[in-house]
Image (tube, rainbow, N blue to C red; front, side):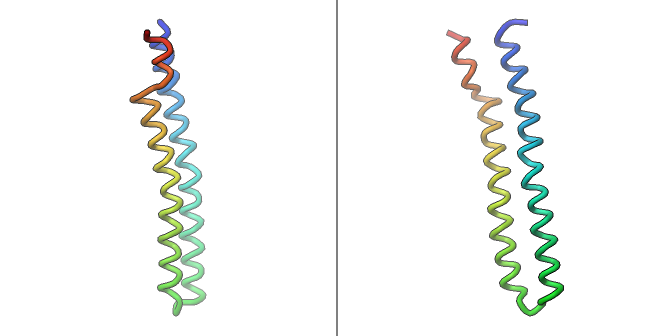
Length: 88
């Protein structure tokens, strides 16, 4: 195998591992946030609006981490900066 093939293969494997690890954290955080919000709703149903508003803002912040990870992975896959050093 030549150098380009090795870099593309390594980048693809790194992207798969990166997206798997990068999405695992936000998924666990979302589950914890939703669980806590449901518990809070069960304790204080009269404050539903406040709890739900805070939950959705928190979920949007957590989801942004997964989106940032996806963007970086897509940059590595489709516009790999390492290939510029090999291809002259």
